[in-house]
Amino acid sequence: MTDDGGRGPHVALAGIGNSYRRDDGAGIAVAARVVAADPSLVDVGPVVDPLDLLGRWDDSDLVVVVDAVRAELPAGTVVVEALAGDSPSAGGDTGAGSVTSSHGIAVPGVLRLARAVGRAPGRVVLVGIVGSDFASGTEMSLAVRAAVPEAARRVLEIVAEARPCA
Image (cartoon, rainbow, N blue to C red):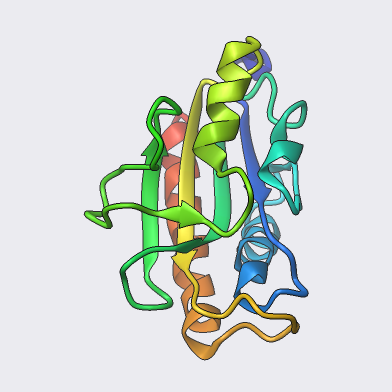
């Protein structure tokens, strides 16, 4: 992984989603908010399909992926999961059970593929917002839109924990 000349780990951010599929735009909205708060972050998104992360997240020590997810939790719930990339579900610290993507291949599958070809980042953390409406349209549901600031705060906390004290 990279060292950034003694400035700390290379941290990247990836907002996944489609702004024309209502709640699926949550990842992009969170990433935009995070980059506005911390312009030093490398934003490798937005990406519509998690497979697009291949080649974009290479050489990163940490990648924080933000996406709308499906889970048996109320819409708007923010979940944070450290991805191992070797299990079919994200399985993390949320107690959410199975958190899945609204995309064909989820981020853990892409991480497994990246590891198989030797191009995986050192660590991947998923910050998800549970969505409920993935139909055509540009407006996120009220619960998901209300969760965007909380998800952005969680991303910034993860990034701050990864960076050394200045």
